[in-house]
Structures are given as C-alpha cells and as structure tokens.
Amino acid sequence: MPTVEVAEQAGTEPSEDVVLTLPNAVAVLDGATSLRPTERTGGWYAAELATALRHRLDPSPVPDPGSHPDSGAAPDLADSLASAIEEVSTAHELRPGDSPSTTVSILRWDERTVEALVLADSPVVVFTDSVTDAVTDDRLHALRTTGKGDYRQRLRGGGGFDERHHDELRAAVDATGRWRNVEGGFWVAEADPSAAHRAIRRSWPRSEVRSALLASDGVSCGVEQYDSYRDWRELLAHARAESARAVLDRVRAAEHADPDGSRWPRPKRHDDQALAVVEFASDD
Image (tube, rainbow, N blue to C red; front, side):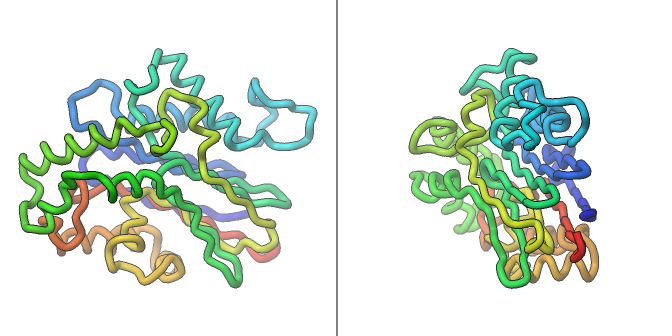
C-alpha cells in the first residue's frame, strides 16, 4: 500500500489550496485568488469540488451516478472530474465565465496502473527507476509570457508589491481571464464540465512507479522558477531525507530572500503551498 505525506502552508490566510487523500488516490486543488471582493473564493470552490470528487475517486461500494458499476473498470478520471464540476455548478448556480476556479491534479492507482490528470498549473511528477516524468499543463504560462503590459517587468525594475503592483496584476488577470476555457486559451475547473476533458493525461504500469509528487504552483516554483532545487529528483530526495514540510520551508526561504520580487517576479510575495509525496513500496 502506498504511503502519502502531505504538507501545506498558507501564503496569506486562509490558504486556497486543498489536498484530498484516499486509499487509492491523491488530488491537489489550487483555488484561484480573486483580486476583487467576492463571497465565493477560489479556495471555497476548490473545497467544494474536492468534496464532490471524493466519492467519485474513493473505491467504495457507492458508485458514481454516471458510471457503469458492472463494467469492472474504474470510472474515467476526466469523466469523474466533469461530473464533479457539474454537481458543484448546479448546486450553487455557477455560470461559465462568472465563477471561481481551481486547478486540479489527480494521481490514482490500482493493482496494475498509475494514472495522472492535470488541469492547469499544479503538476504531477512520477518517478521510475530510470525516468522522471513531469505531467504539466503549460497553457496558462504560455499566455502569460506572450501578453503585453506584463507586471513582471515592473517587479524586475524594483517596483515591489505595492498598490500599483496590485492594479497591474488585476489588469493582467482580467486580460488572461478572457482566455479561460476557450479554444486557444487555457483550461481550468470552473463551471464548464467539458474543461475536464481538456486535461493533460498520462499513465504508467504500477510495477514501474516508485514515487510521485503532486504540488501546487507555490511549491513547483522551487524547481521551475527559483533555484531552490536543480530538478524534481533533488526535491524528492530532500523530502525523503527531511520531510515534505522541509521542502515548503526551503521554497519559502527563497521568497524571503527576494522580498520585492525583483529576482523572481511573481503575482504575490508568498503563495499558498501544498505538496503530497507518494511512495510506492517495491513489492506493491
């Protein structure tokens, strides 16, 4: 039976990251921070969606209403996510384009297979004896790097996280938001169930998988942006040698060393952090 270690740390209270752990699956959801006052935040939506996902991923006798319990196969991950999105959207009368949103990353396993689903920028990384396989969704990043009026330029020049930064960030988010869940844009869990079928998918034979990581972007930046770790294997080695929480602390230390965001331009000084480390026993 795999073991799962989870570490979480808020950037600003309360955290909008949610981690769901089950006997056969782990999911990380990173709710999108709203830059305007709103009753239903990204963190609220992430928690609601995690609740809707729980019974669809849990290998319990209670079947997903949309599944075929006599088929002998687990429901498709994208179908399960789409069903969960529809449940939350219907229950709370959410409308596409006017709804909070969240990333979704899922790792699920059975006796034969390990499979991953990644929707938006919270990666899943799977380790075999010879390969590090990072399952990433880069579509939002591609939009950010090609957009005009990037607030990152001002941060590089020493502008810092002041009120003008907040205004420029809000303008950038508004511009990017027009590309949410549309062709040629990026896809995220919101109020459109079809977005689930735009997720990045991968699978591996269970016998080949040794470990896996699921991370919100407040942790993955330690590999992808900061110089906290050379690569994912170094991050895994640190988690094994010390703890998952030690990984969060090292990434946070890099942000403390760059308080104005001039070295590593980013939306906010400290992001929420969530990390799940899954270890598969060699005899599983």
